[in-house]
Length: 192
Image (tube, rainbow, N blue to C red; front, side, top):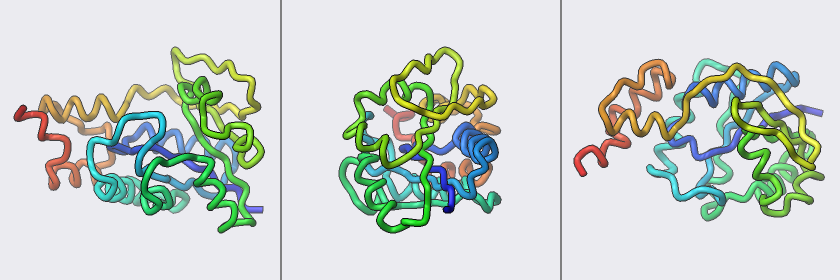
């Protein structure tokens, strides 16, 4: 059975931290692919800052050069709230020969009891928690843990740097930086 990791998120924007997490989990668990799934509307966050189309294009640019990374737009195409339960139901029906591993950060491990239909989800997928400094991984749920190098990069920090006109070099793949600059993404708050 094929083993595929899933990394979901708003990717607003996608940065090197996302790519490092995906690669470290792929190598640690011997996964054949990692599917990046941008959400249309995350259930646990406020809305994304920019359109789903731009976020999808940034992810497409970020994944260039790694043959094990794939873009899956299932949640963007479905519209509305992006519940993992719904996504996995569809993916498991479309890919019965795949065993899925859902990658989440330590902050999401602590949030698991609040996930939509978490008991059913635990039967559908293996959760993989990646450790972050300052986060506890206490959970009543069986999850696999993967140690990753600690990288202090977040989409929030990158958006703030863009607003302040600070450099974002080395925080994102060059192709993503080019896309952000070409489309002048995240800059509108600069003039407010």
